[in-house]
Length: 285
Length: 285
Image (cartoon, rainbow over all chains, first blue to last red; front, side, top):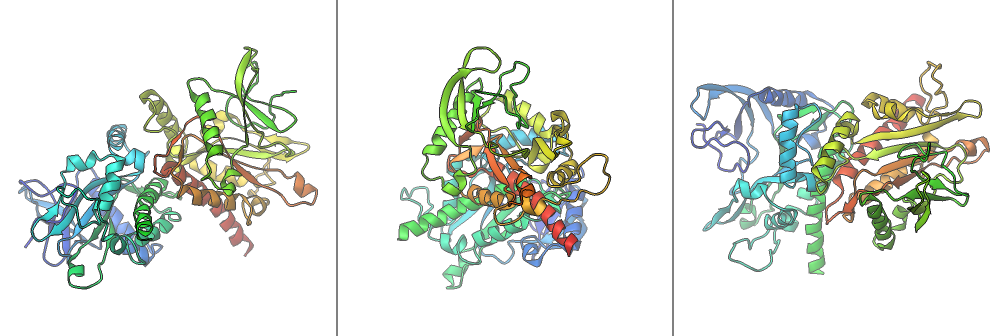
């Protein structure tokens, strides 16, 4: 049985009879192929990525598994439509907190059409992409059983200022995020989520080291999903935070050059997260 | 006695009655303040940079020394004009080989005017800036006493493709660069110039580490000068290669964010130079 994913924070959604991704109970994510060659480009990327032996396993773990394509009844009722069959990266998590961060100060690339470049440039300048090297595309933060998720509207998220981005990256790992609370965000999950040898910062640094060297792909307009769930903590287990790269409709051949646009934005995100951990250290001294 | 510098490879030159920089015999470089606030912005940058105690000495060495401003007779005969008084970074070098590399996939910045952004974007796309994260703005390579310098024309340099950039970075450290030679470039100075613990690659890596952390300045449209002279080698001494950052008319406040645009381009240049050294190692194995 296919259903609409609950935990999608950005991108097209299969609601109100629109075309969007579906999931099943076995942990698979069915993403309709996008029109205008984008769909076929994304299939080509997954095929090329998983057949490339130069990509180390510690990097592959940051990408959704790929199970090919499949014709499925589209969520908009338009009949059979080709879908990418991917790993549902949030499958198995209970009430996950998720943030979608689109990396790169530019989402366009020299090979694109003038019209596409103009559209992207406008959006990059209207959001934080140009200034910060990344923008937040969407997020949800689980508060507790009673109040459920905090999930700000897309329009509000895209209009974040640099200051608001800084704040929401702290909010993402705080327990006192209710709007009526006027105390400072406590960042009580920061060390567990961002810190440590297997936390999000460590994973971003692994990714960075690869991007300093790899010249195979340029990941235009891709996102890093950051996610964790508190359920483990409640059960006395170790909290597990993960990053995954998603959205590869604009990946192009690196042609022997590093992806300086993704790398620059990634380093900027790393700096933002490092500062949260540094402030934590300073406060507990 | 002021004179026109011999070793300028890019930017406005004080030739044919135009306004341009001058040097003296004591190792100082007099740069006329540019119009449209650019001049005053560059003065403001030098003042701010040298009064900022957070900038470590191993980073300061990459910048020209600053001795204030001075009213001088302009090189275009237009009368007294304010000049920046800087260290002449090539002073003391005999027949230096020099390359000016403008860093960043974009030379514009969000705070600039639409007109300026449009102009820069066009040039970034016409040159290698968008694609490689940097472009070569000018260069000269000293061959020998008989044939003197090879100094390609500005227009040709700005129209380099990615492949030509790769080639000229090898040519910069080769001894067999005469156009009539059809043998492969020998890269015979590559280890001495790019390699080693004090070579250009090591300096670029020092700079990179700083850029991963510093959020004080954004260096829009700045260049890295790479330079060395073979004279030392002829005299049996160790060849000394250096990098210097120049051109700060578009530096803006970092506002707590790293300069992801400069950093990305710098990492791309580092990768190009690393590859030359790696190929060298492979060839001698």
